[in-house]
Length: 421
Ligand code: PLP
Image (cartoon, rainbow, N blue to C red; front, side, top):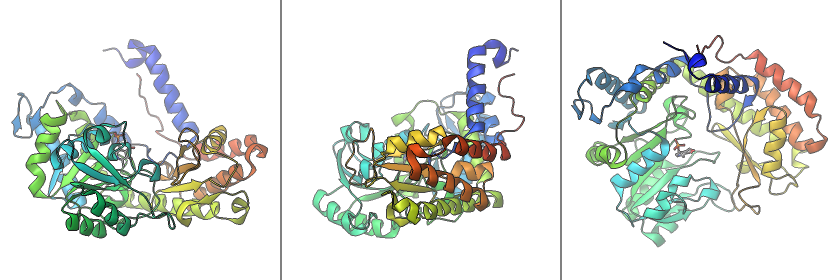
């Protein structure tokens, strides 16, 4: 049997180049992570060959005796990890999990109420160009303009005005913890369902380092690949009463055959997320974000009109506010790329600049914590970021890049991994 390097040298070379890129730089995109080798192996397994439409014990294909056990393990592990009554591990992605949640909880044309995209919400929470804004009547709430926090009272006011069937909690770019109990009270008051999309903070919830939305929300959706560190994919948790509607919304509502190799990888990730090592990683993730926020709050940074949104962070990311800086989000992203640190620009609430440029940076610590970084390394990275943003084009980028290289080399990634032969 031909290995990849023989069968397709072009793709093999590109995989090796990407591995080199991941090894050589510092990955600080808040939605990214490095999966363990065990997850890569499950993803790259023969389970990709198997059709398994339906659910364990009720498939539309023969030969499912082993994949049934895989899916059952994945479901049981997620149920145990998050204390959920119902689990669906079949969504191919976060967006598809969310599409199924809408299908189960609302009718096309119903009003939905989610956090505005430019205030930290996600495309699938009702943005006009996404299916969620096209098939549903999407209304938004914003953060409180004084505190920049998600404020249940503001959500309540918008809910009383708009009468949503579904209120959406969760976010893509927000540095604090939401009050799920208060959001549930608002939903109950207006007769809406509460759905929380915990894609970003699922890892901390699993580790017990972030409040869980599971006891409060009717439905919780998530990706497996952000802080949770699993394969690129989605899953759904819910109360028993939504089991039937969610099962049929995922299949046949949104999807055909489940990706059994990815479900196996999710099972592995759920298992690993229950270990003390995972908790330690999540702790370092949170410490790293706090260290970064503190450094970016220092007077030498404030002098340049740069600050940290909400003054700090409770999660794995820091939102840098550049509204009062001459540097745009795009400038800052490009500058950090030149020293080997990958981040993404992001709008901040009430952003005066267009989204293509934006006035914010979203910087996350999950991938570096997975790589082994602890407080000492995060101090160094935070200082490199701070000095680069502070000095802009006057920064000694070469010297900074050399320090990034040294840090990356001290924490080898996927040592000895052979992905092509
Ligand atoms: N939900 C939230 C809150 C997200 O941040 C994301 C990803 O950015 C998604 C859903 C979508 O996940 P995917 O990219 O797997 O479709």
